[in-house]
Picture 1 (tube, rainbow, N blue to C red):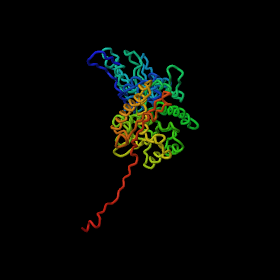
Picture 2: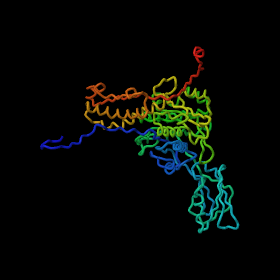
Picture 3: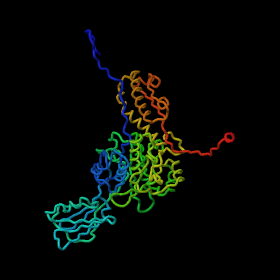
Picture 4: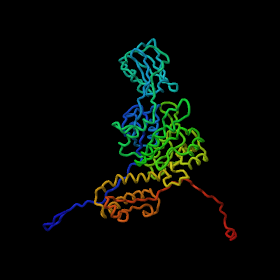
Length: 503
């Protein structure tokens, strides 16, 4: 406090009660699954090129790599990747004389590559190398002449999509050979234990490793279990503990779990019957989970079209919609729900099939003339008509989580402050300013701020007993914007009044 002693002007700086609350991030997406390389601790990646550099890019044995690829292609900007499982092996071939090649990507897919070496009798320092995996064929003219460095083996293979050199020997010409097969490529079998991880080792692994991540808003765990060669397909029951653990984690971390269709939903009828029997997530955690159907066919840069789960693509659509429109806009529809990089859907649903699944809380993907492939649903796993749940819609739930996370981060300064009216007034000021900003951005329903939201922090919800226990309570409510899911157009004929006609 300033001490006044002499006549004059005194300057005193007073701390402002305004502490602006910044909005939390809304579309940081965590991915857990197999990758061909890279760290096993949670690692932030901000582009597809970043993922390629850190985790080896696309690999045919990794559903996660394709989910991340689709995420960035559809508008995602930040991901956190947790790599699990073992290390795959690369297929290789030894052409003799020190010349060795290996598949560019690991796994059993490399075992399908064959190589042919052709000699030109008039050119002893040159040979033709042909590699093919059955769908793609590449041909290169290789020189062993030190003066022609640009035609050296490693230089010509730098553009190959199939193979790379696995040797430091460039001055010898291997013997002629035809269709020699690559061998030794192995995939990795993913288990639910890999995904669940462990909290005891240091560092943590699998889902447990996400405890070390400050914030993530969406969680994608691509379905990837090997189908049994005999007997009953038990993958959904084997995978259930993974989904349960992920749903509980999302509930704790104010995040949304995006799910691929269960393994058993291999036909539309099976999907309907499966959804009627219960969605993959039930109970209170279902409000933080979303399931999509059907699977997608995408253009695979490594070869032919590939079937993948829709969750990674949907996460990208959510991120794109958050940037363009806001977290309160449903990430679906002809304008915001377009699926980039998707060639087709595994099933082309009818309106009736879509209607049945929608009422059960399943978000369908549709193909429409002109608009192409789009995301055509915005319900949580509590979105079935029979539930009547207030958190049935994805944007409503995500807005609530966004507000919770923003206030959780933005009100930490309150801790240990004197619990009385000046504090309550400051809380009302700062939280009210944050909510008013959302109202002006169009996040809430209501013509006025009073209709759209409220912030209460006063003696009414902070009695003396709570003050004595060191508790300050802030009540925040908002009027959500529910998406226009059903557009009802009523048409009737208009006829001029008879008396009007006669006048």
